[in-house]
Image (cartoon, rainbow, N blue to C red; front, side):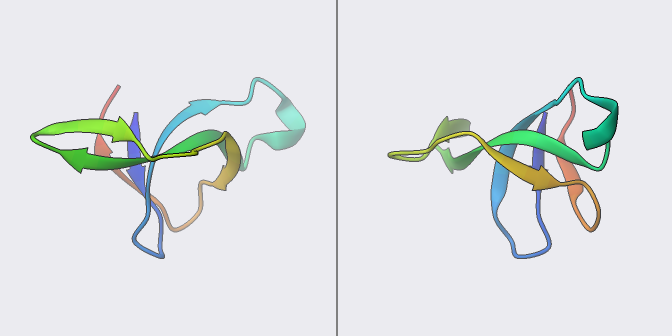
Amino acid sequence: MIIETSDNRFFRVRETGNPDLAHVWFGVAVKRSRGAWIEKAKAREILVRKEASRVVEGR
C-alpha cells in the first residue's frame, strides 16, 4: 500500500505484526516515475506513523 505522510513524503508500507506497534507501519520511501512507484535511491525501511497519513494507492 502506498501512503502520503503529513509532510508530503510517500512510502510503500506494511504492517509491523507487533500489537505494541499498532500505531506505525514499516515503510520504504518511494517516488512516482513514469506512472509507477519506485524506491528512492538508498531507501531503507523505517517506522512510519499512521496518524495524519492518507492512503494514495490501496492494497
